[in-house]
Length: 439
Length: 119
Image 1 (tube, chains in turn yellow, red):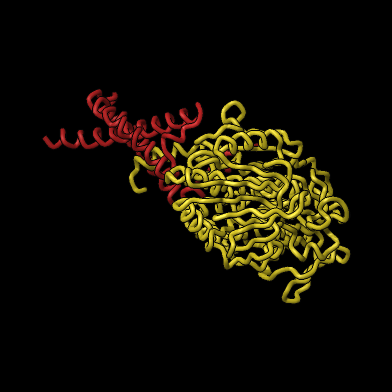
Image 2 (cartoon, each protein chain N blue to C red; image 1 turned 60 degrees about the vertical axis):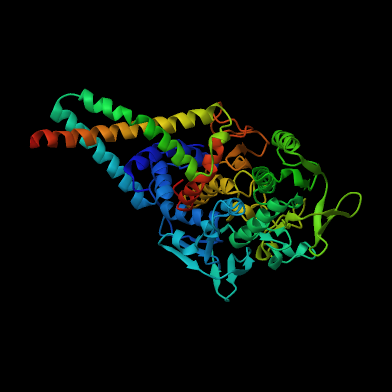
């Protein structure tokens, strides 16, 4: 890219894309008022997308606060990139950066996992035995992939015998691509599914089904390929209007759908997966599959008093917060953002983008002795890839309303090139800007 | 999307290209624009022969820009799925064409003058 002509052209072409990318990640930048002076001790648990964005924003809003971020992971993962890695479009390192490079000056990073949270005494004990007291706590601990819940599966199988696991991380996504590439050369049965728990990016299992179909078509092997999709419940997607569209597209692409099946075991030797269903256990054959395990809150949260104490999430452990303010229902000085928040929709980077400014504003208002009017309406978005080169820019809220950022211009339920361009080019840039608290 | 501020847009562009490359590109664009203004003031008019020749380069700029975007994004003409995609395609082409005309004119005007002076 040293040719100035290309630079000029691409710069303009990307202008619209970047604007679109902002929509994917959501967007809100409250006017920067004078910094609030405080000596409050704020602890952020987790330095992923939500925790890092929060740290950067709080540093800009507060003067004198002691902000501590606790996370033992040295790597920062750009998770929206996993699907592209597992499709052979990006290398594994596309999603990998370091935790430290995103954290602002003035924040104290303790690179250890948290071992215990005591919201009564307002303190956290780390795995290394450090005790950290707080006045305000931001839960941004993400979620845990419960691989052990799929009997017979282990991560070292990924990439062999037609077993894929896109969610497991960038290296596993790359190995999954190897398996998908071989499968679409050879043909036979591809089996896709999703867990029955809340999950991050509920569109991703659908995307990967579409992409496998697309590669088989491009390679001319689609005639030798059967694609089965086992839905965990009675629908393919939680938003009814999107579900109908995906149902039609699956019909068009020749994907066989069965409902109410949840994967519980896999037998790599026989290439058979076992599903629980209302009729009892059902076996389904596969030659290629993308294993997605149940998703639950990290142990440190589940072992604390912070999760929902009743209702459908008791066994999953998500933090009991108000869906509109993200403030904890029983501990008002605690907020939850990102995957750990026990709210009905989301668990995407786009949700993070819209949740963080709301929780931030309520926290800063608390410190300043004011009230914040900020409300999170459940906005999230999913660039639902339907083939290499096309996607549907699906955006919705708590009420299952579609919330298109470009009404009349980018149709949410149409397979469009522009939506693909946003996913490919602008999304990561917008995500990175969000991490820095700037988008 | 609530607010799309200039600051946000700049932050996103810095992330797409990297801070150094982005600002280098801005600088290159500004230099070409200044050079254009310079030759415009110097010649006190648009030189028709330069402009005509520069316009010949337009289709090359348009096609190059479209192919460049497609190459960078693993996509092609068959991915056009709706009217908005055609608009994006055309805007990409127009941007490429305009950019190349602009540059070709400036280069000719600068070099051409030098040639005349050397006679």
